[in-house]
Amino acid sequence: MSTAPVFQIIAGTQSYDWGKLGLASKVAQFARLSIPDFKLEQDKPYAELWMGTHPSLPSKLTTGELLSAHLKAHPGLLGERVVKHFGADLPFLFKVLAIGKALSIQAHPDKELAKKLHEERPDIYKDANHKPEMALAITLFRGFCGFLPLPVISFYLSRVPEFSALVSHETIANFHTVVSDSLSVSSELKSALEDVFAAVMTASEDLVREKISALVKRYESGEGLDEEEEKLKELVLELNRQFPGDIGIFCVFLLNVVDLEPGQAIFLKADEPHAYISGDIMECMATSDNVVRAGLTPKLRDVPTLVSMLTYNHGPADSQIMPPAPFRSTKHTTLYDPPIEEFSVLLTTLANGEDEVHEAINGPSIFLVTQGKGKITWSGQEEVLSEGLVFFVGAGTEVKFKSGDDAGLVLYRAFVEAP
Image 1 (tube, rainbow, N blue to C red):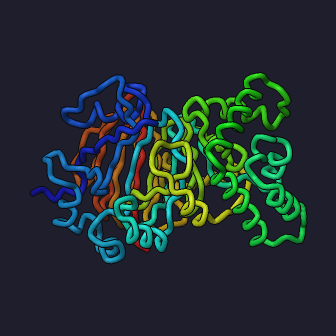
Image 2 (image 1 turned 45 degrees about the horizontal axis):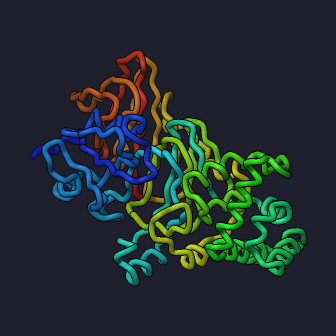
Image 3 (image 1 turned 120 degrees about the horizontal axis):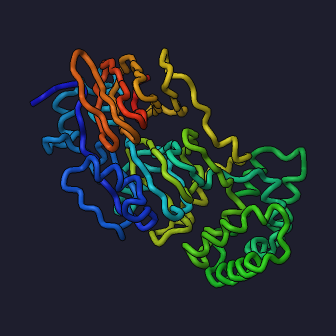
């Protein structure tokens, strides 16, 4: 069995209702170029490409051997420090997401809650790990991320009658008072926000449908819209087309709408509300599949858990965007380094003929070529690279990438180094 430190792996695809259809999906585009016997169906939604060892959809070597089994047989590929700290497996899961319509209003539990949920309901919460994640835009991306600044929510409660109708007068009055009082402390602000969010998310289905119908009718007519509501009009109407009468539509008055350009990223901490709305992204997360949902989904909703688990942090949309940084001595590579142990991501962009050396990383990595052609060389060996191919790079291996295509060479590399 080969113990080469660099080798191609075969990813897998997930088909969820929210994915883009057929070749409109980057997941399908990459899969068609890299997965043997992949059969494209133009009317099928291709939502996610999984790269890693998660048992729900584990990657394989080109020989058919599971990547997880290969790593257990050759722990040196992970590196001694990573094995000691994380165990004999990858601590991250790398994905491509092609978002055709909104994902659920959701959050991911921290480690303590994940363990509790798994023990109590293992059929729903299938592992005991937390799931902090990062979304890195490949194309223009839009998503919900974190609660709006409280004065903005206060404004909507005052100016959007369909929204305020879901919350009691007493709760609204208290919220306005706490937000306007400069002496209010953080715990009071968060408690007031929790009361509003809980009231909205637990409102009766009949009332929700009635108020969404009224809101949509008003927005379609353009009646009584001020500048702030005008910004949200098309999003409200689009979400209602996708999920008619769903409570998640009212989250436009509670959560930040974040727009990312290609190359921008957001980091989603545990217990923070979010939902992807549209676009194509690279996503990296701790190895887990735990999701607590409460809106914009046909799947199981666990509103009580979501309401109780959130941090109720709040702030402007641009505060959610994670600043990139240089990566060591490279010229064409950007580092996205969230404040967690399990992963970081590199974006390398080369024009035709350019090259880039990645010094040895003290841990394993996986990279996906999203554009162009070229080659990777290490220790006198080389492999040809082209769009859609996925490779594993073992710990302690210095690699050189070289572009050999007019389209250049673009690749995303997820890695981990033990603290």
